[in-house]
Amino acid sequence: MEYKDYYKVLGITKSASQDEVKKAFRKMAVKFHPDKNPGDKKAEEKFKEANEANEVLGDPAKRKMYDELGANWKQYEQQGNQYRGQQQYSGRRQYDSGEGFGGEFSDFFESFFGGGGFSGFNQAQTRSRKGSDLSAGMELTLHDVFHGATRQVTIDGDRVNLKVKPGTRDGQILRMKGKGSPGAGGGQNGDLRITVKLIKDPRFERRGDDIYFNHPLDAITAILGGNISVEGFDKTVSMNIPEGTDSNKLFRMKGMGIPHFDNPEVRGDAYVRMVLQTPKNPTDEEKKLLNEFQSMRIKK
Image (cartoon, rainbow, N blue to C red; front, top):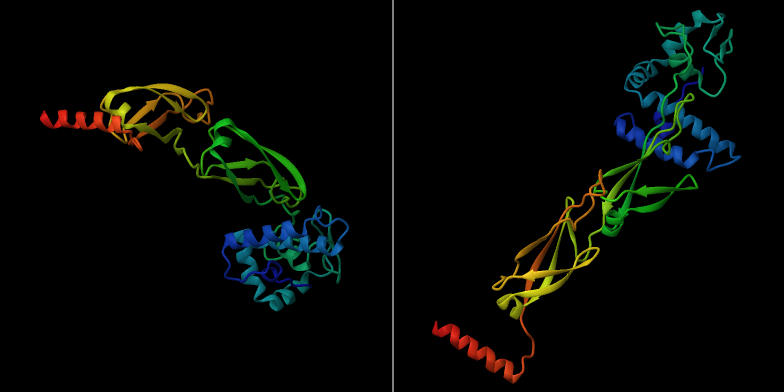
């Protein structure tokens, strides 16, 4: 009867957390997947061993039994001898006198979880189980989340198009169903979970579905008021500046922000911050007028 060290198969220690078990299995599943290693029997065997190890260590209850009984394997083997000679079936595999279990799983795995007949374990086929989800990251620009975009993702050598909806948020997880690790026992594949990271824009700052940006305002217009052209994210608008506008004054541009994720027809707002700029290199005549203006203000 063969005993397999599933911790060694996955390259982890017995103290590994469930997350570490999952990560180790994902790494091996990707590396030795048959689609990436066509015709490579050694890689196929490694892939099967990883699936078998994950079937046990990835299930806290099965892992506990494995840890407890594995340490007393010889004792278990001796107790199991009394069951030799009985024909027991677990679907597609037969337990025959003196032969043990065959097929793709080790004797140890079959006896614990698929072979039945010992220590109260039922005779049953290995249950189908969904494959593990895989995780990845994707960087998007503000332009991508404003207009929507299509990104190409390579999975096991295959290129798949991923549609990004307008309004997608920083940190949002996009799910590609069935693109994760393969399932066990005929179970469905896991999913691919892609976490969005928004690249910082040099001009616009996103806050929810609103955007904030700066716009220069010359001192004369700030004092006297007037109309200026303001270039928003997707269009340019005319804006009336009241006289006496201070620097850092915020003006709201309704409906000129980011589209809502659930309803792209509705948009947030844009807020433009006026940054005062003083005239550079004034002429002598301009200086004279400014001095007169200053004198008038002082006399008041």
